[in-house]
Image 1 (cartoon, helix red, strand yellow):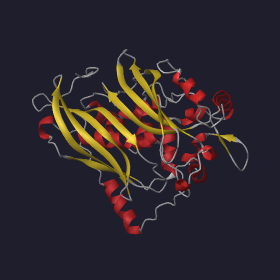
Image 2 (cartoon, one colour):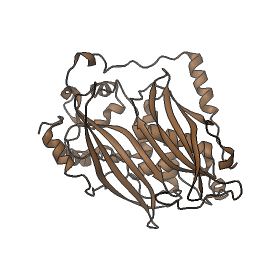
Image 3 (cartoon, helix red, strand yellow):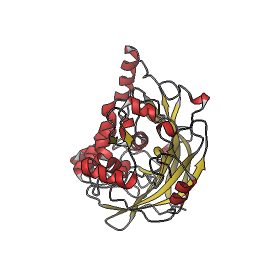
Image 4 (cartoon, helix red, strand yellow):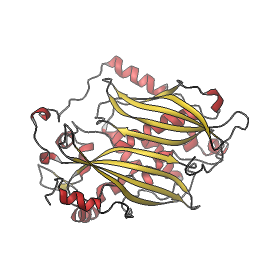
Length: 386
């Protein structure tokens, strides 16, 4: 096998792991949704919902306790299931989340994870790449599955291992978008105007197909925004850790980037923070982390449904890099509503568009809203709903 190259042998080795339970000890940043963990995650997302942060407010809510943003499960396990293929770049492609009950203060989780599917792909950017899908179950201290995730990772040739094609020339570089002072002022105004329903219930009967979900705006993206996400979601677990832990990880997994100036083996995640490395891996510059972008969609939806609603599912595909300097507008629209197992379920289409009008990510979601006659949602949600 050649390091950094997708080979039939490497594909076969990964395929042999389909259905096998995988170790996840180095993928977990937190095990318990402590008050600190919840607060740090909310800060890393930029979500100041008092349901996550204010003890007195949260105890008066339907949950009776501080709750956690549903996507905090990314901090319990980052959903990257991308085994074998040594040295081959992985690019986060999306997550399909399903939640069955709220995540409350001091909930404790264990994770079961396995590779469930591997697909061989081809395209203009990469003549041959692999899409790996992992399934994760997050089991709480009550022995119940609080949530599940299907995490999708694209495995692509790294750096000079990519096939050189004339149509790909000069496409690995992008200059940051230059905003006018008026544009920045308008973006800041929109960010600060994001509505949150809070304690005022949104009833199933009051939602109609075609209704818009109030937007959430993120940007212009800065390196500090990315570092805040790292601090909240994965910290020192990223690519095996730091110092001696990082060396041991790279000896086992051959997963690293060679610093061209020093010759040192460094985290492959450098591309998220460093423009030259981001370009080297074909992303166009420094770029965000896929789950970070998905957590912004969750923020939009939990703002809209308020304290009485429940985010049941969120399936988002990450379509293109979100580069440092980009701004995203997350928007949603109601696409359907029905009653399932006695619950009022609302379907939503979600999408993120950048400052150039280009689709950055999109997907679907479902939320459960209370009926006007009883005003509450009971848990856990059936797994799965019929």
